[in-house]
Image 1 (cartoon, rainbow, N blue to C red):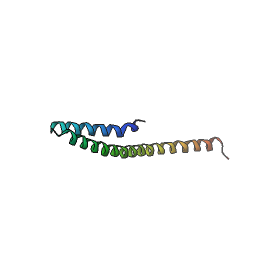
Image 2: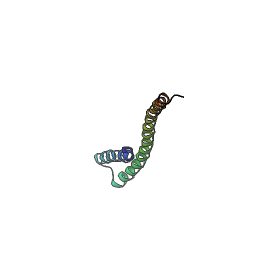
Image 3: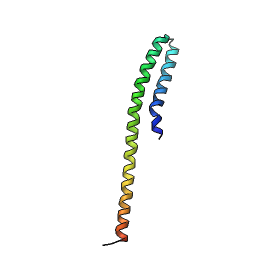
Image 4: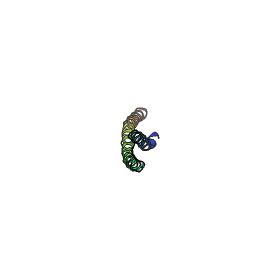
Length: 83
């Protein structure tokens, strides 16, 4: 599923933005790398949380559709085999 790549995508976008800002501001290399590491870790965790929320939302959307089709099948069985 496409959601497995979501944490990495969020992390890499945040890392790219951080790197660009550090280059523009001419930050020292060691300080830049430390900041980048912190940003990557934080945004990876945020990406994991986002992925779990998106997957949970997608699962909740699928459940009502399956419940409706089960009800239709039950009714059709009752109509075909009245007792």
